[in-house]
Image (tube, rainbow, N blue to C red; front, side):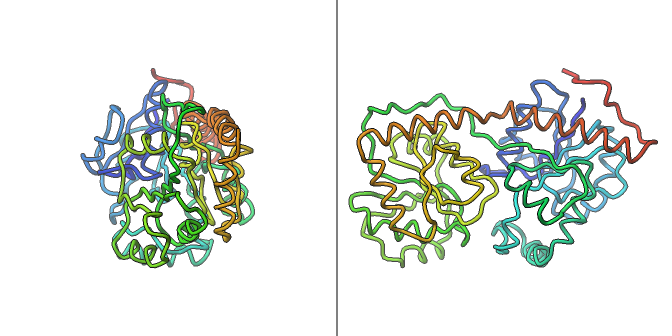
Length: 373
């Protein structure tokens, strides 16, 4: 199967969630299928696997309206986009679009890295569900990363197309924590500082945890850092890292008491499964998606209650409790892998080819060729 994968959402400096999701799926798919990547900036190749690529226009440019003309000439068996915004006017190929979550309907603040005109359109787009329906119904199959989001898609009747799960997964790691080894009283937060992430409650929880330090790992603007510092947590209890490398992140996970996240909404919560994959316990807000991802391995708390976070941390200091949470996390993380996710995507691609052929009997697809390598 010749799969054309839209990698134009790959970052050029460091991965965000969607960038890593796409790159990891490409790498896993390319082990068995003929995969070609679409890029828009040669710098993206530094964060992508060594797979054949074609350079086309940016997904944020006006040319996106007519991108299908260029893709038609490449004659793919199927096209996969890790977002739902890919242009499709005039396409003659099966198409899988991805909807990760519905967070921005309740939390309409757009990502800060988007250009101002795109941020304005973003806010308008999330004021109603009908634009989302128009986008998703252009696909042959809609992929999503969790059963929680699939349920929301159904509840809001966002598409008439088949919805299939293509899950997220942690990066492979050889690190496994020794439950008997010493650990520091540090707590880690990995994620953005957008309002729905609820980092304020994490900072406030430190007043009930003397001797502990909350490490905020991600990049942060000076203005947002000042807002969190104004919450007056005990001196030295909150550490701003301003971004860390993958290796630094693994080192911090290998030493911490727990990873903590109190997000009020999430598409998946990748840091949860990343921490569990190393044996680091997780304390998370009690919301449906974290229940789906964390199962019985995470310690769940009320995201509005700083004291609940402090109580959960103290629970991990009880004899045997940290080791139990570490073991359960390792077992939970073992349920997720990029090879399994690639298998799910391959199934979605085959279904898209079937759906495309059923709705367009005259279309030319080559579903019978099977894997090319």
